[in-house]
Every structure is written in C-alpha cells, then in structure tokens.
Amino acid sequence: DGRGVDAGRTLVSAQTDELRSHKHRFVNEYGTPTEGIIAFSDENNEKIEVNLSSGARAHTYIFMQNTGGVETRPRNIAFNYIVRAA
Image (cartoon, rainbow, N blue to C red):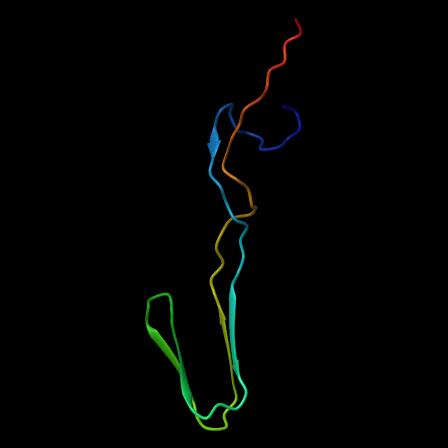
C-alpha cells in the first residue's frame, strides 16, 4: 500500500500473534529466618536449593530466559480494502 508497513507481505497472508521479547525476574528475600530451605528447579527440572541457617540473610534472584519476538501484535491477515468509484 506504499506505506512500507510489513513490506513483502502478500495479500491475504496470515501472521500469528507474538509477544515482545522480555525477561521475568523472581526475587525472594528473607530478613532473619530461623531456618529454611528455598527450592527451585532449572530448565532441566533439576533441583536448586538454598539452605538458610539461623540468622542468615538471603537474597535470591532468578532471571528467566528471554522469550518472544521483536514486537507485540495480535494474529492478523493482510487484507486491502478496494474502493471503487461508481
């Protein structure tokens, strides 16, 4: 249509939805626990444990891997409206 949006898309071509690439962060903070174990699992479902002793202070930061693409968009189909003068 001359605007340069989605250059190369053909008429009536489909495009799936997509979420922009992003990270998730999980933060777990304890002040002065009496005892405890914080357990997580990694991408291979292997257990990760952080053991806390009495009076210990623990800050646990876990960052998830980036997922998604370069933009956020709904599923769509390229369709140009054709207007004819009668």
